[in-house]
Amino acid sequence: MTRDEIRAAVLRALGDVAPEADLARLDPRAAFRDQLDLDSMDVLNFVTVLHDALGVDVPESDYSKLATLDAAVEYLAARVRA
Amino acid sequence: MIEFTMPILGADMEAGTLIEWRRKPGERISRGEVIAEVETEKGLIEVEVFASGVVEKLLIEPGAKVPVGAVMALIREDAGAPPPNVTALPVAGPVPAVPLASPPAAPCVPASIAVGAPATPAAAASGRVRASPAARRRAADLGVDLAVVLGTGSDGAIGVADVERAAALGGKAAAAPQPAPTAAPQRPATAPPSHADAIRRTIAAAMARSKREIPHYYLATTIDMQRALVWLEARNAARPVTARVLSGALLLKAVALALRDVRELNGVWAGDRFAPSPDVHLGVAIALRGGGLVAPALHHADRLDLDELMRRFRDLVARARTGTLRSSELSQPTVTVTSLGEQGVESVFGVIYPPQVAIVGLGRIVERPWSVDGAVVPRSVVTATLSADHRVSDGHRGARFLATVDRLLQAPEGL
Image 1: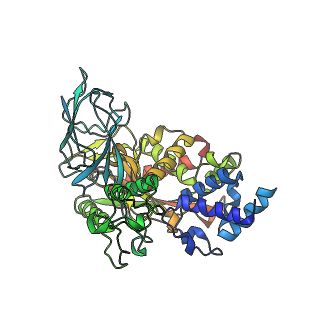
Image 2: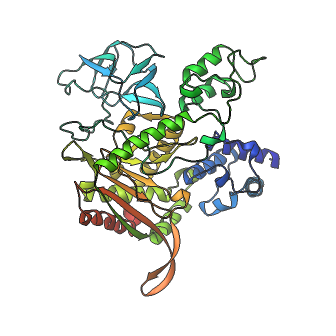
Image 3: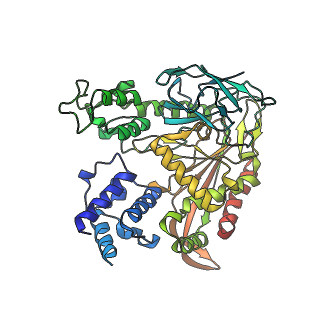
């Protein structure tokens, strides 16, 4: 799976938990939790959607490694290939 | 014969639009089952019936706007059924409702609004398309782009009917070569937020009444969460993402159990006296995307095991945000929990939501220097507060409640 595909999957997952968000304006290097006003339930749902889409089960202790779009793509790219 | 009427699902609700009947004439329906879907400003609500019987006649066509209290259907009740005077009363399953001998004297404000907490600030001013959650869902179903839908609700808000009209006119985002003639121009960013206004008015009415009528007292305590969090983290580590439990759910469970212990906090003020509830229906304040809050009930929160509570909590949040709550969830909480921890504040003292008599506030779980066995160590702590009605309980009992929450959280495996 390419990085672009992973990025698209992450954006789809974000769109899922925050359907009203304007993802085109998302700063890929800033925490999306703040940008999209996500709470811990949203984060859990985000991780769940990623799990279903990519087959990556992100442990709770790694949630902070998915804080920004770029970081999430990086993190997932390493796991999807592994 | 019983009359099924349009229920009141919010203090500001004057009418609702019938979207769909879930039963046809001649079909059986049991109490607690959904008979109709109704659209309100709070979204699409599944309305349950209070009595069992056979649907005799449906009096309203889908799409019609129906005032609160208007008869919508006739149900021929079973022999020995409960008294026929209230049909749309929110009862979940076979469990008896709050034992109200008489309804509250003042108009009953249901649990569908915010309590002591501001609406999510983000969305109102952002110039997004305003549409009800039900309309959004319908638009997604029909493939309609909301940007080309002309809203006919108050101040241009888009309702389900608008979406369907747009779909009929070929307003699909990609399919329409030209925007439909009804396509709305970009809404000016300065348009006043009418939906937010409506929610604001509802909050204003309920909170002003609360502060006018309810003599509040306030208590707070700081609870050591270290043990609970370590336990929960280990429990979650062994589970797939779908089975993980949030610390928020653990706190809700502790609150629900402690309410069983201090009954003066769980129930409603019925005009001139307190009607305790045998069941704990925990109203959970949920911030909505696009602004506003609802506080629907997590039924029997004290009796659910932690995993089940988490499942229902998750489901409730999802449905609150997509706009498919049930009428019983909107009108039945016996107490409310508000949590502003996500916003970073350490403590919140809620305003009691009439006719309830208490509101529990949970702040953010923070790491603080803490004294344990004579040594100062970093610990995760949370500030739990209680605002309670002094007509019903005293600080002594309120203190017992908070102490019980604390005690329960020190033995998380029992939750």
